Length: 283
Image (cartoon, rainbow, N blue to C red; front, side, top):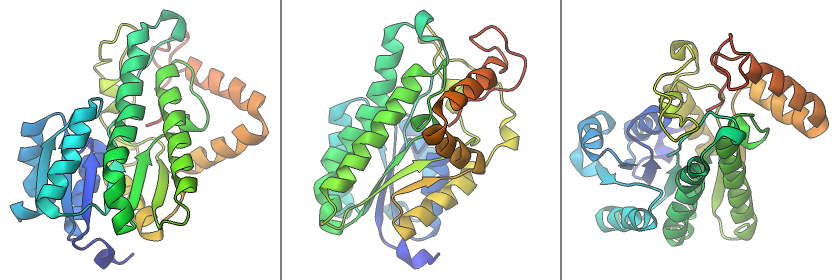
């Protein structure tokens, strides 16, 4: 992949204060892009900005809660005011959950839809005129759970399915406009998503049941993201297990339902009350 592809491109990354978002911002910065880092933790973004580029004129930090439409509009306006264009939008900001639906406070699903789905819709809506002008790219970071649902993740899976449907529709609407739309589905990736995952009452889970050090690194995931952008792929499913799950779900849905149930039932602290093995949440 030629790093020149990204040089001087203006790239917005939401959820850029940690995990895949931060790793992607750093990678794009190393390729010479102008990077806009968006997240709720503004002071954290400011502290991290030098790791994205040593030139402060090439990094813009914008405090953004993607669940707020006005914040997403302001993010786009700030980007255009500074750089005059938008070439790539990476909708990465996201939130997970872990609880059985029967036990779930409905505010949890609303929160996940506001952040994951509506955050993607809001940012894409306001960036779209600029992306069309640049014949640029819009990406939605989803999950294998956006292809094959996970029990005890009703809000998470629903929001990721919704993002995929939205972006697939957008791609078809703009087939003749030069817009590139990519659905990006990592597998197990080291990130903060499990620690921040909401429980039945909406409180954060607080810790990850997985050994994060054994998962795909956020940096490796960012490299795949960059390759997908360079090749203008419609979708990327990163892991062999992820690709197998998607393939099997389309052909043997009952079998996959049963296997998924058994797998999640064995995880540590499983909401099914049978847990003893590792956390199975898909980022």
